[in-house]
Image 1: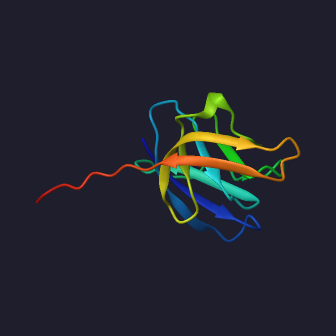
Image 2: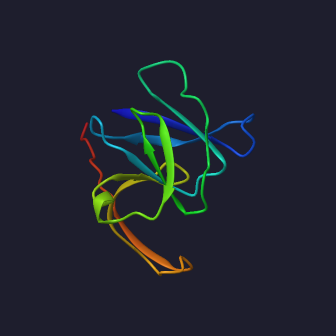
Length: 118
């Protein structure tokens, strides 16, 4: 499924963050979100209610079907999930490691593409 994502610092002025593709029922990880986020399936009209940041972790997990947001450190259970970056690039999480204090982290994404000849 394709999802459109918008973000806002104040909940009033919205900016396009990117478009992500997920498998049915699959959550979406995002990096660098501001205070508010909203999303919708691209084949439908109407955005979900704005979801406000609830923590200070650098990653956000959106459960798209449930319309929930959670700030977190990704763990092993998140490996393989799609990750949407600011600017609209999407990859799949390969690994995520962080220090105990949360002051350092290292992560890797896999990006794939398909060029159609035409």
